[in-house]
Image (cartoon, rainbow, N blue to C red; front, side, top):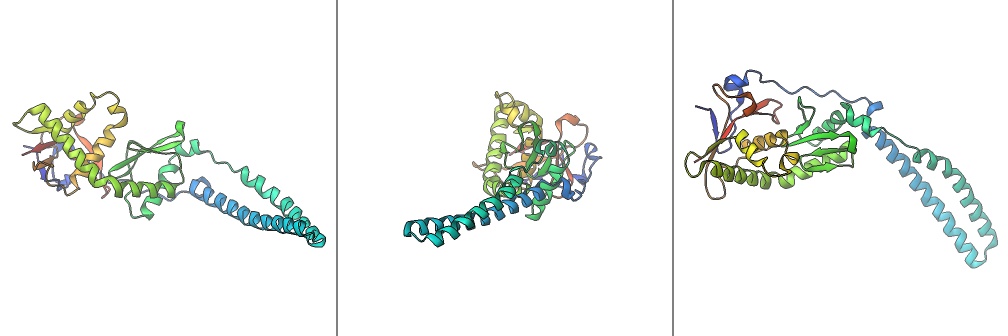
Amino acid sequence: MDSDTTGGLFADTDESSEPQAGVEEAREVPPVAVGESLEASLQQHEADVDALLKDAVRYVSALKAWKKAARQGQTGARQRAAEQAARMAAAIEGPVKQAADWSFDVAAWLRSPAWHLEIAQSLRALGLAAIEDPSGALLCPPLPLVAEPERGRVRAGRQTFSALRPSAVAAEIKRLRDRVAGARTQEYLEALYAATRHMRGTSDLRATFREVYSLFALTPGWKKENTELDFGQMIYALSVSGLQTTRDGKRFQVQIPSGKVKQRDIFGVYGEDGRLHQFYAIRFY
């Protein structure tokens, strides 16, 4: 009989079955070199533009003085303001061109390990977990982040980010997690319950997660927007959510694999503790 956890309280998979023999911890993420850093490059670029804004304020001030002198007919003041504005316009031309020529190969960055090294650092700075998955995704449970270099963006579940500054991505990930975690997990539980009833009727309300995933995937377009990685992360989120029942009071058990089960029927997920957790089935009672 499968080992299980009750009401979403997760039992550490270290203690169980044959399929879990390969439990491992996530690889430690090293710091990213400054030369490869999009965050550092954008930070310097922002500082350059900020300096231009300060110069622009002084330039506009000179133009206003010029206008005022012209309006009042103060020829001496007009001359001084005009000369000052001309000097500032000439001085700002070079820095504007230099700042405008800023470039960074974002596609190459997204194809390299640098993107998740940097975003991982930014996530951890906000107190969030950041785990490298063997698939190449960066996990911030329950959200998997995947680079899409050909589109110049990062995807987290159904959410995409074309604004790629790592600190900004991390802040948005935190906002998303804080906003949707509880409600989304409850909806996910209700969907699992509905799928299990659809397949089993009113008796033996137990289904493997692979069966449920296959059922959901029959909906056109669903599988494209919900990868196995996304689905597994939602199982993990449910297991640690503290939820006890469905909306109509059905209790549940999230079951881990035990005995001889097919490897393809197991959803392996790296949790916030950096360890690999494995899930097999869900039972309602």
